[in-house]
Length: 302
Image (cartoon, rainbow, N blue to C red; front, side, top):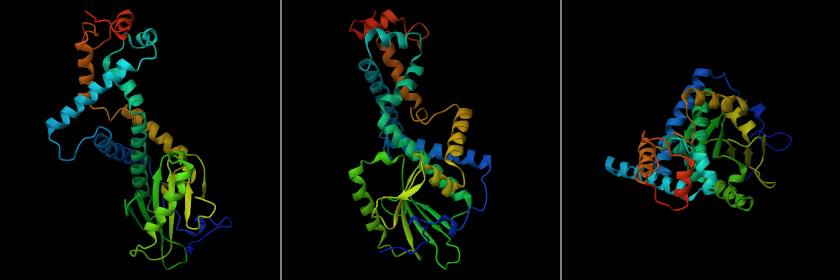
């Protein structure tokens, strides 16, 4: 059933007939939103990526962190480019540096999930503060990340936006999109707790572009690529949002890939180097290239 929300000549949502943004967020508000999103994504990532249970005791959590460190050492030991090259790369570095350097490679696929969580939480915070939306809730229905209501100018009922957020369009293979789009709209259609029309939106936090139909035959579903997505949610352009995140991370001396790895895991990683006698007398810095080459080649280090 075609929803009677305002549409332009391309049959896309006509933003000019929706309530505009009422204000521009201050730098302080944006920075605070980034901090909140970072803390939330860190908490979720440690549970989901490091497999920490909600009801685990401190001892169980500590054991899990140690296992992560030991697993990271195995990855370092087996994942060398070649004995000579990797020995040259790591000689003279501290195990703390190496842990933070290689962890993103070991967890590459899972860390992209953390970026998704961070930008989802950031979108929620910025949209909430923008004052444009009548309401905004997280995870309103299964598989929906945000549910927003927005005033339609000169209309008695608002538009409800059911939004699922992803990093990029390529996150899902082309053939799978049809089932995802149809599945989400089927869950939205029977919902009773709304007045007025609805639209299903897939928002992409890191995929440059504007808005377009999700598929040629989509009548109530759109893809909002990053330029359109961020501006509509927060009144901030995609590039300004990205620069704000970069500036804040620089001041905090952090990255999305760093805040997940616990200190306990890094220390467990270091203990493995001590076990194999690969550290200098400071118990932090790796020994010279020739010793690391011997280790990679299977020799015991005395």
